[in-house]
Length: 240
Image 1 (spheres, rainbow, N blue to C red):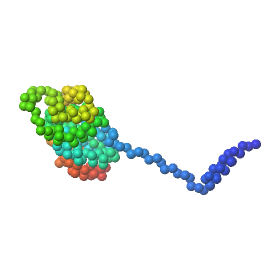
Image 2 (cartoon, rainbow, N blue to C red):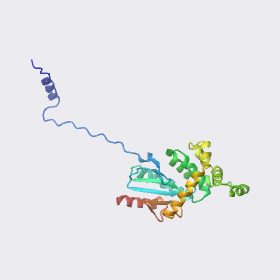
Image 3 (cartoon, rainbow, N blue to C red):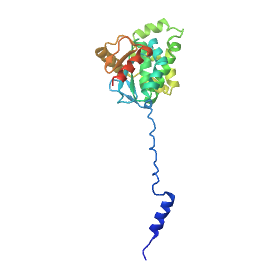
Image 4 (cartoon, rainbow, N blue to C red):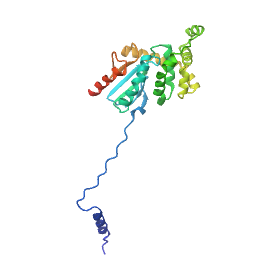
C-alpha cells in the first residue's frame, strides 16, 4: 500500500496556512552600527589616526601638548568632532605631535607615543584638559638646574621637565609604569624621529603654529577652533 503520510502532512500545513494566505516575511537583521572611534592605528607619517581609513574626509591636526589653543580645541572641539563625524565613519581624525615649544613639548610627546594605542587619545585628552594645572604651576625651575639643563642631552631635558611639570605622573596614572615611562623618556631614537617628523611637516605644510589642520592634503589657513573648522568639514562632506 502506498504511504500516504505526506498527504496528511500537506493537509496539516494547509490547515495552518490556508491557500492564498500571504507568506510570512521576516525583516532582515539589522547590522550593529560600527563605532569607528574604536579603530585607532599608527600612520606612516608618525601620527595616530582614529576612525574609518576609507572616510570621505581625512583630517589631520598638528598639535602641541603644551599649546593653549590646542588645549582649547581638545576640550571644546575634539569631543564634537569625534561624536558627530568620526564615530559615524564620515571623517577620520589623525593627530600628529608637533613640538612648537621645543623641549617643553618633548617629554609629553615621548610619553604619549609610548602608551598602548587604545590609551593614546585618552592620555592626549587628559594632558590637554590638565594643561593649565601642569604647565601653569607656580613652581619655577631652580636657576642652578636651569644652567645644568643647558648642557644636558635632549632626553635628559625631556625627562626632567616631564617630571617637574607632572606629565610623568599623569602618564603613570593613565596606565604607564614608571620603568616604561623612564625608558620612553630616555629613547634617543624617538627624539630623532620627532625631529625628522617636524622637519617633514615644515617641508610639506610650512607649519607656523599649532593647532594646524590639514584636510585632504592641504593646510587650512586661519583655522584654529571648532567654530572655524566645522563649516569646512561640512563643505568638504557635501562636495563628496
